[in-house]
Image 1: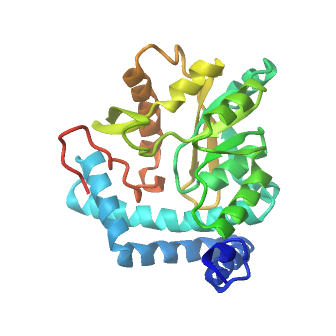
Image 2 (image 1 turned 90 degrees about the horizontal axis):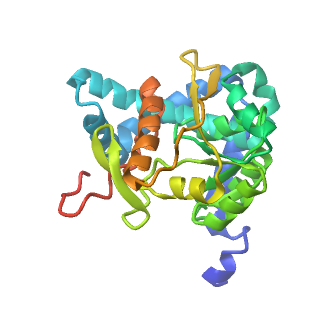
Length: 304
């Protein structure tokens, strides 16, 4: 059997590890909550100890963004970040494999009136989310209160992509490829809200450089472009795991005023300022494991 045939035959041995991972996610989704948290912490600590490349990226990001921390505080935050992201794996499995209704008693949702006002006007909205470790669970909890579509990055493995997309389609109305600008605009103009996370480095061509924790960061221009093309309100959404590791808080802030402007850098800086403020509430829950500062201004050396 050729590799091309194997790509559509999910019984092929190359997919067996993926099937095992999917099975494991279904299993852990049904664990008692306390055990789920313990397993997540163990995964996070194992990654902290052995995933040296990701630890280096995390250490670099946190040194850049929190220069005021001393060495002990820095080491502690790195460790807590890995633990939080380990728990996030358990939360993602729960979001993808179970009905979110069973989590309603665990969530407090503030600022609902901001989205309710938009919906009462029959408008679509652009929801600005953040890549916290609780991202997929946050989407599932949000769906208990407001419907939304979601922009996402397709997975490279076709079997896992199918599993992930089917799971997210249970949570969101429609999942839209991050490069499908027309799809996003079409859904918003049809009156749908679309969840979009603009806090990753998509490269020089798609971005402008705007400050993020005081550091020039390649920031996507698509946020302002969507808002301009649709006239939709841009709704900042904050979500995090509470310190008890058992409950969650979601909060809508008022829509951004006078956005977008005629200044791409200023628009990107406003979005980054919101994201930075959201991260500072619970910095350990952010996905510091990715290279947020990968793309540098012309002539600057790499940071990783």
